[in-house]
Image (tube, rainbow, N blue to C red; front, top):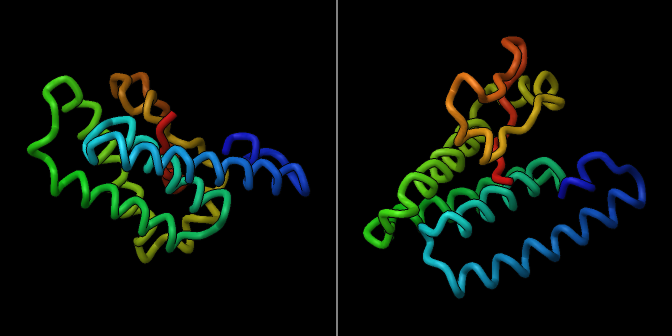
Length: 147
């Protein structure tokens, strides 16, 4: 996905295709092997949804994927292990934040202003608030993504 973010033309197309195949393959494994609340499965869904939104310009698919991952995790909160509670709930909040951002009525205005805003990565979100990168006041927040 990251190659597709800055490449152009055929290189972008090739990188996007390769990323899409990798995401689909990883999602198949995650859905078979990991619980819906597992932080790796949630992080994958977060990244894949941002890929749909940012790279493939498919907000409907992005929202569907993020909502499905969030809803599946909510339905199985009882399977949330103590060790992964903090990571899982953080990623669930990032999924929710992206859904809110992507479905807000102000989003059309924000896309032009915030298109170049830095993406909030899972690792950044886990840092103390004073160390996390803040978007400029004039920009709309960029979708959050796990690393």
